[in-house]
Structures are given as C-alpha cells and as structure tokens.
Image 1 (cartoon, rainbow, N blue to C red):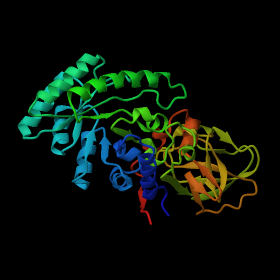
Image 2 (image 1 turned 30 degrees about the horizontal axis):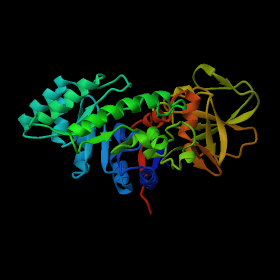
Image 3 (image 1 turned 180 degrees about the horizontal axis):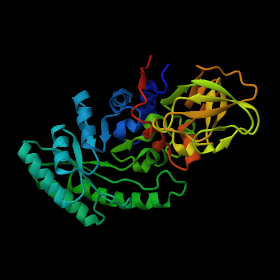
Length: 372
C-alpha cells in the first residue's frame, strides 16, 4: 500500500475524447491539450489515449512538453501554443511541432532559426480578440502577420487562432463579442490564404457554442473528465479519469479538547477517534482544505480536521468508529456509493478544477488503468 497514489483510467480519457468529437460540427477536428503533464494526469499516456479516442492533434504550451511527446509519439501532429525563448524555439523546431506566432519580431526569429536548421515549420498566427495575452489586437496587423508568414519561404502558414476569456461563464455576451471579432478576421484570412486551419474553442466553448468549432477545437480539461463549467462532469457526459487515494496509517483516541495538527486549529468537541493519513500539501492536498474538506473511508465521508501538513492529514472518524489502520481512503474519486470530485475541492478552495489536478505533486505515483 502506497502512502499516496493517483490512478488514471485511460479508458475514460479515450471515451471523453470520443464524446467531445461526437459534438463537433462541420467536420471540425479535435486537438487534445496535454500541457502541464496532461493537467497532472500524465502527458504521454493520456496523449496516446486521446489519439485512440479520435484526437488528431496534441496541444502543449512549452518546448520541453513538445520534446517529450515527440520522443514518445514520433508520428503525432503537435502544436506548441506558448511563448518561447530562442533556445526553447530551437527545441520546438527540432521536435517538428507546429507553433504560434503573435508579433513580427517573433515571426522573423522563427524564420531565421528555421532557415538555420533547414526546417520549414507550420505556423499559427494568434489574434488577441479579448484574452489580453499573446496576439495582435489590431485586425490589420493580424492579417499582415499572416501575409508575412505566407510570403516567407522558411515558413508555412498553417492557421489562425484565438482564445476565449469567458467561455465557461454563464453570461456569454463577451464570448459572443470575441467570436464575432474572430469570425470577421478569420473569413478574410481564409479568403487570402485558402486551406488554413481556423481554431478558437476551448472545452467550454466546444460544449456550449457550435459556431466556435470552425476547423478545429482545442479541448483540455474536458479530455480528463473535468467539467469546464466547474459543476458536475456527468452533466456533460464526461467521466473523471483521476482518483487520488491514500490510507489510514494510524487511529488514535481523542479526548475532548485534544488537538490535531499545527496551530491547534481543531480540537475535539467530544471524545472521538482520529485517523492519520500519510498525504499532505507536499502531495498536492492544499493547506486551504484544513478543516474544509472530506475524505471517503469505508464509503463514508469523514471530515478532514486540523491543519494540512506537508506529509499528513488527520480525519475525524467519529466516536463509534470501526475504522482500522490500513483502511483505504479516497480524496478524489468514488468509494461505496459516495464520491468526491475535483470540482468539490475547487469550490472549497474558491479555485478551479484545473488547479486541483495540476497541483498533485510529482512525488505521487501515477498508476495507469488501460481500457479493457
């Protein structure tokens, strides 16, 4: 029994991708985003599962991510979407990844390095329609950048893209504003450069607005069965792929007033039993969950009490507990008829489900369950 373990069901990843593809319109392709080590799930195993599910492109943010995928998947189509230094750019080019450009200066650098390496990379021009990050805001500057890429013999214009800032929010007014701006520029780019790939939708936009599908969508969080709207993945017919488990290392009797953890933030209001689990913020159980979460033991939710420490948490088992040392414990996932979602922890922390799974640290072994 390990002190902490994250189990990832690759069949769930595969089925989530197939479910997302079934929602696409107009022949759009799906790019599975596997950056940040597959949102904490493991980039390479999840990339393979996503390709089996029907993804045609794999999206990353960083050069090391592109290099890792290329080493494991020599024939996959990769798209690196993040900012790159000159050294990182060479790594992306050598990995044979498509990449984003957003300024003339960076386009010129890409062309220079590609020429030096004898390569002709496929380039996607980014249009900032309102996210306020990478990309030109001026439509004419975006179109000029497309023209400059297309005219450069060292480069191939592959696409034009944008990113939505509020697709996961109930109010879709800003999404519609961004979409309208992008549609106008994308239509002109297509007219001037036939065959380019137009893409905009993240997971939320893919599920809520078919008009955003264009030629390709870029799904990240939904691939892993996390709800892009922060509610219940089942509402979108998604299957959470990750479970985070530990076990009860010790059971202790607490008299009224006895405290658990640093700072004595919890004291037993009456006689009870407390379980000690060997998992903590060093593993990704956020300190903000102190006195603010539950753990499943024997299929029953048990309150996490006391301050989360680096290597341990404590759980109130109740006065009549029959929990014994060695009992399995679930922090994310199902046990018996109960479940704890990453979305539940995100709400407790006033954050998003992305951060919950990305925050599970490297010292937690990932165990992969292959589809039957």
